[in-house]
Length: 377
Ligand SMILES: [Zn+2]
Image (cartoon, protein in one colour):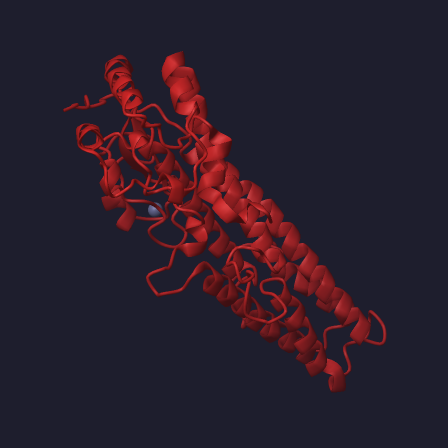
């Protein structure tokens, strides 16, 4: 049995807050552009409904305008059925929001895997890295262990059960993001539809209010832009129609990106034999004491609060909306000892014709496996 030495120093970091922030920032840019485009379309509609840019929309046509604007907004979130963000396969995007989110989830999955691949390349002896990188690209079905294992293989799995690299990785599910069901029973598809509905409801209220107050078409266009483009309103929330209309969509994206990032980091860590556990680092942007303070193993400034979670009992962020806490692998200090034990196990596995399971040494293949079907967006 291998005992993992406790790391008292500040832990070496793979990915962590840096890769999560990169993923969040690039998604924020893409979504901001999307909201700008949506605002532009609705502004164009306002101008088309009025007699001139300086004139208000005629009362007789105002309801029709608000309905048309709402339809445009809805079509940014769901397909022409008005309900589904994704096609029947559950992953092919039917509108702008799910398309941008798919790309963002891919980036959020890939960045921590690449960070882990770089660490492996830098720290592993060549023979171990080559063995890991040589993992075959099998589908989950193919790699599922046959029921009728022979005794020798059974014993081997028993002996090295803590090294998931020898086992089919149960964490490496396809389309984790698209399959995950939240505690309220909503899938990602439901959550996107709800964000779209909230956006439309807010826009309706805002436009109705502005028209009632006699806003001209060009004023409407400016107001829609200020209301829709993230960050334009600043912190003002005292409007009768509520916060920024982008709030719901941006909050959903941020949470999903965190989830995809931390899940990928976790799945890659599980098949890295040099990982002794999974850390939960408290986000520096954490507003106040909350449930995360109990769960965190590393504090805001990088100090260790407690031992990392065992791989098979990890607590993954986000655990509440706006949670930007991050999961990352806790590495083993004595890599030489692990390398010696691993070499022995590899010898045995070759004799039994067992191959390593897909892992982060081939970052691209591992990301594809985690991402599964929805590469063809
Ligand atoms: Zn948190």
